[in-house]
Length: 128
Image: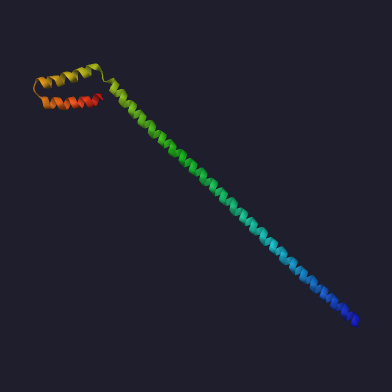
């Protein structure tokens, strides 16, 4: 009987040890699952951050391209305006210049020096 009792106690001890080992193994597996899930979540967050950064960079590049187009358009309009002004100045024909100079001369002869001076100044601005 003593032998059977010792045998039973050894079995109980062995079962307790086995149960303890299973408990540690279960805890180890749970810990590994938590680490795996944490790594997966961290990886997902990193990918989301990269995605949003690339999307923002693309959006900024598009905005910059649009601003550059606006600047080019403004420069183009300014150049067109300047060229139109030069074309109009070039189209003033010699007959018009002769008539203006003749009218100013007539004012000077008639003694209207003040008006002649004003018209001469305006005519100079028009020609320049």
